[in-house]
Structure formats: structure tokens, C-alpha cells
Length: 115
Image (cartoon, rainbow, N blue to C red; front, side, top):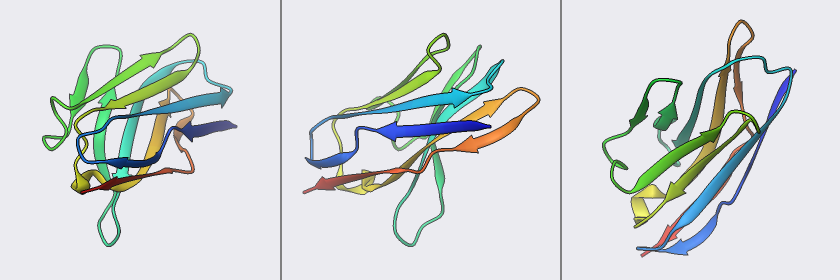
């Protein structure tokens, strides 16, 4: 079984920064992808950023403001969010794709950006 625990969410003013962390535990032999998604009220869950062994991708809305990183040895991922905007308000979810095991999600962490 694989478990993900997110932390670092909170309330911040527009223009501020937050750093989200995701810690994975369980049987994880090979991480294919770690990513961050978000879901705002009344909207579908959307990809924010993802990282593989060969590439990093970002949603257009966050490119240049957010940075994803991964520590494969520690099985952790982080999302540094700078210059936050009210439209970044959402529940942020960590996702991990483990080779030959499947896709797993964290429980989510709330990020609220006030104007």
C-alpha cells in the first residue's frame, strides 16, 4: 500500500508564497511521476505541475510562479508557490504514479489566497 501525506497549505495574501510538501510511504520501488493537482469549488480537478525522470510540466496558469521538485531517495515532492493569486485558491492534491503498482492520491491541503 502507498500513502501520501501533504502539508504546507494555509491562508496567504495575494503576492505571497507558500510551499507544499508531499511525503510518500509504503512499497515504492520506482516513482514514474509525482505531481500536484488542484480543485477549486465547483470546478474539476486540474493538473498544476508534474515531474518525471526526464521532464517537468506546468499548467499555463502557474508557469513562472510555481516550481515542483522531487527527492526520489526520500520519496518526497514539493511545490513552491510564489506570487500567489486569489484564483490559486483550491484544495491541492499530491499524486504519485508508481511503476507496476498504480496511481495514488493524498488527502489534499487547502490553499486560500486573499485579495
